[in-house]
Length: 140
Image (cartoon, rainbow, N blue to C red):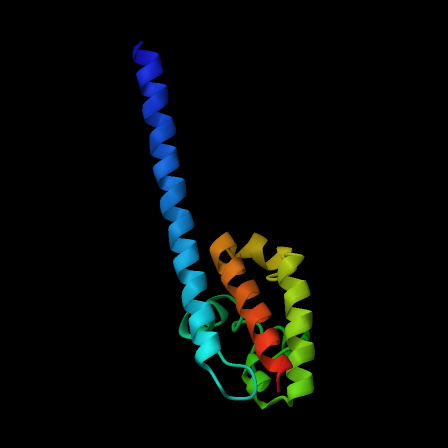
């Protein structure tokens, strides 16, 4: 009987934790959608939560003064807002593939610095943002 109660208690606790995490993710995604929709400008927009992820996980390698020449040549986040609309749409399409395939940050970087890996929520936030920006930019 005690084992049954412990098991039931564990199942209920796990259910509550899963529900809480799911609600937090949905809340974050809703905020991204609302921020993206309220932007009426042409070109890519960066909501605060998206910018925070990019600053923390991407900018070390993809900025003008980065040490990694290959990453610096491939992409500099500071240049993205200056791209024309066609380039931005192409960039977002490429970024979508990279995120969905889990190619960034590269495995070599994550091995050296595990804290640089995108967690599931960060990855989902970025993918949702990319999808919404692509949809928004289609009208431009």
